[in-house]
Length: 202
Image (cartoon, rainbow, N blue to C red; front, side, top):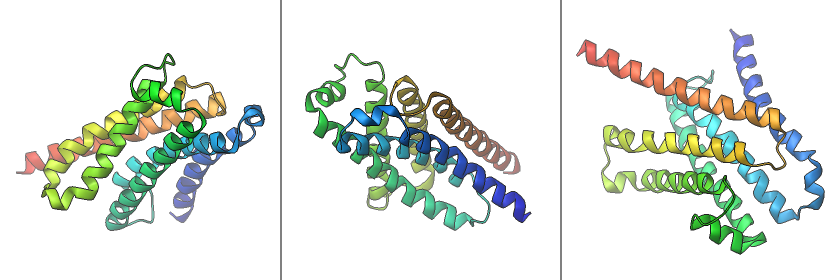
């Protein structure tokens, strides 16, 4: 059992570590400034955190209790929002006109609108999570709002990443994106099955 736990955590480390390591060896970094590099890697980290989130909420990572999964999901959600802020702020610092075009959906680059949509969805989830108690959102209502936004975040983040020809190596990037999609689909199916089973029991 312990070997399986180690294998799962090792697989997650490889899935995240390999794309990051290969991006760090990209020849394109030689022509980039430090702020741009920081912004780019913040985006890579954000995508990695998007992979971890469904694994936590689905309870697929061994050795964590349900409570720890929820707490980790909460804190990693905050880290995801911070990574996106660093990503956007860094790109704004290096090229304000390009960011204005992206935020106003006037950019000619095909990946820009998907990144902006994912960004606003992440901001919406972060704000709602922070204000959930004040707004009096019940768990059922929170899920109705959170799940569609999570789907938007995953879909747009993956498309945004795949369309960018940047420092990330092609195959490892595609593999990471595929894992993000598979993990999200898996947790959505499992949650649907649990609710259907509860409905039958009721």
